[in-house]
Length: 68
Image (cartoon, rainbow, N blue to C red; front, side, top):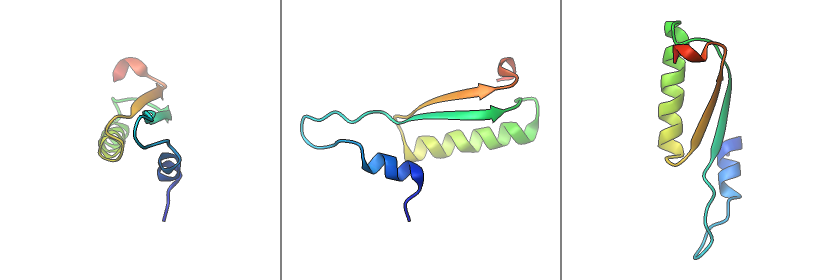
């Protein structure tokens, strides 16, 4: 079963001489690293993204960005 991300990946150009774009991810509604639950969810999310998309670029929109 395709997830939305894997569907996007399958549409990326590939083959000789065709560069593949890096996957870009935007994570929104992140609160604070001071909350252990939020911190744990973010850590696992980033680990899984790195496994599936090793060259992805992640941007996080956080309510308390200084806590990260």
